[in-house]
Image (cartoon, rainbow over all chains, first blue to last red; front, side):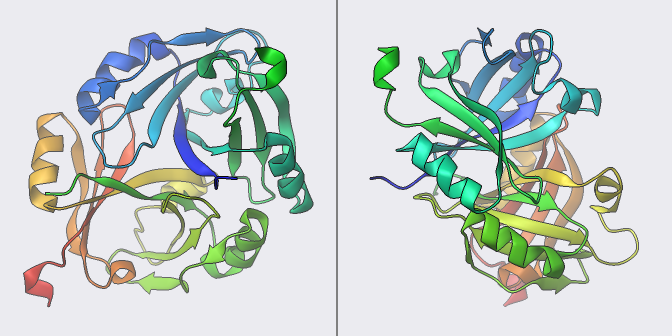
Length: 142
Length: 142
């Protein structure tokens, strides 16, 4: 089992496609993805890789559709929103975090941005929003 | 010259010492620092290392003193606040970011949390707050 790894930091914006060129310019980033609309997750996302030795990406996230999980955060102004860790065993990881009183706010679902790999969202009692991304693809999705 | 590296993600709280035990418990973190009061930076900070393969820490930051740079953010509820990159040449890095239209919001000053190494704060036109930490100690401070 590999240890969790910080995969990206999420930043909520109003419109990913409109925001992306300016972000790319100001960070001096290599654009690492097109913007991806995910109707299941109700978000549009894109990933930027800042010029850094680590591989931690910045994810731009915008609401897409009714009841998007980031709509209320955007209404308050947007900005830095969550940390996403890549983990080997998603279900075991969620169970471990639940035992530490974190709450699942979005149960595991496949994510278009990660080729169908499952993600889940939790919030700790201290209001840190954490996304977990399953390292291996779920067998049922392939 | 080594490339920049994501050193920590800052999260603004009201009281670092009060928050730290709960954060340590919910993240399953190894506490990597005591809380450090920095009158020059007008903040109190502490660092947590989540159980992860990377070395990206979470910094809890609370205002300390009149005119603290995080006071207004706390007044709006606190939360994820900034990304801090460790860089070789702080001044050259700031110049590069200025050329990309980022603005210096706190010019380089020694930071108690980093043994007197200099830090500076910028904000990009997209409202990403970025802290830069000088990798080598500044000669004048030693």
